[in-house]
Length: 228
Image 1 (cartoon, rainbow, N blue to C red):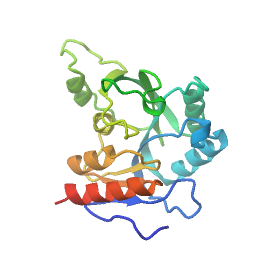
Image 2 (tube, rainbow, N blue to C red):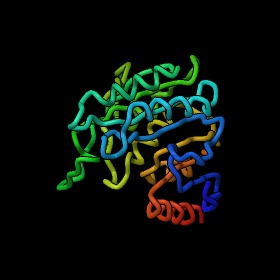
Image 3 (cartoon, rainbow, N blue to C red):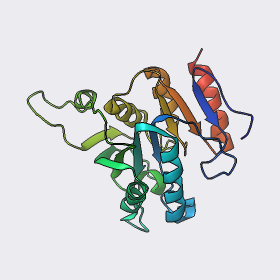
Image 4 (cartoon, rainbow, N blue to C red):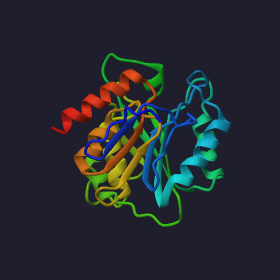
């Protein structure tokens, strides 16, 4: 494990990847939230994903929650469901699926971030007991009080195209899971500043793996700036 990790306000960023042999994973993870590398050129491999899911399960707290964010790449539209099956196959309990309707940043397009207008969020539990709090989601989506269920289609701001997922989405998923303050949240693929911002705002601990050295430095600075 590299020594250049950040220990500040319980937010820790490591310049590594979940596929690195020397990566030291946190234990007792209460929420894992991440966007998987979904294209072949990004390193997607079904066996690697299954091996990753198995290792994640071994480090999750009992009844810990997992949010797997995917889009459907042009090369294989069914790939998100292949990813979801890998998590079910290693023993995660599938709770639900959420479909994110993304609000575009005008004039910007990118196959990586905006390949289509929707993301899938697959919701798993490392056990059979979980609590869901839909009220923060209802308020964000401005669902009328008389509507009994806000459903699983959320319209969420994309945020920066440099981020794998937005602050709004991270905030909503963490609030949906209804965890206690100072809970441990883990993003093994990084590539987003959202978890840093939301964990600090909501008073949670976070571990993030960020293989890209430039982004690692960027997130290091962000933690220091937000912690002042």
